Length: 241
Image (cartoon, rainbow, N blue to C red; front, side):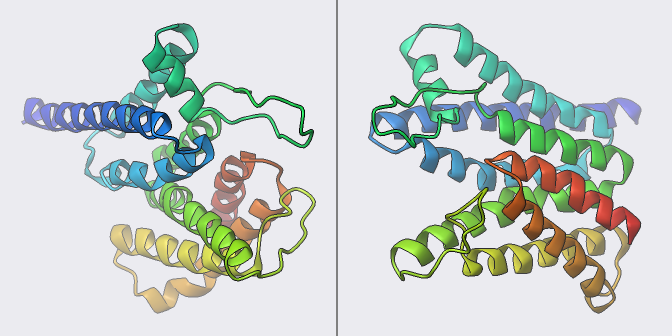
């Protein structure tokens, strides 16, 4: 029986590794076709949510570190190898310097997917301690944060909605923050419901408070570190409640 359980975790880990290989290939192909690195990086977390949905299926939760280890290995390889594929992967997955000076050439600033791996690492640690919290937090990072980003882009560029003017993130809009709050509340509710079967109505107030913390963290923490910071702050609020 134990061998069967171990085999299921190995199969899941193999599927995750295959998915990461596919994401790397698609990222490079999109970059070569002219897609901006920012767009590629914002499109990755929703695809990672496919893996996050597997987390409750793991028999031994320590196997989820295989996924994070695979991402780290790809990132280190992209930094180390000079072959065109891995150089393009580095650009596709790397944050760039802020191009506030027109004459400043943009270049990779950190290890590829640094912010994403850090946020997923924190969510994974929550999952090890309190599975329902880590599961909900990881879904918020992979679904709610990208949704808020794209709503910000559409609201400000197509509908000329005013941005909120936060110093750390001047491009954020009210529509984006409302999207983040609503999506985070729903995802946290669903994660708790999956593990405990609790009625949604009984969870709304607590998850709404946690989602408000998520939105505040996104507004106040600079750069993409707000995702990792939100995994800490929102998880702590959930734990207090």
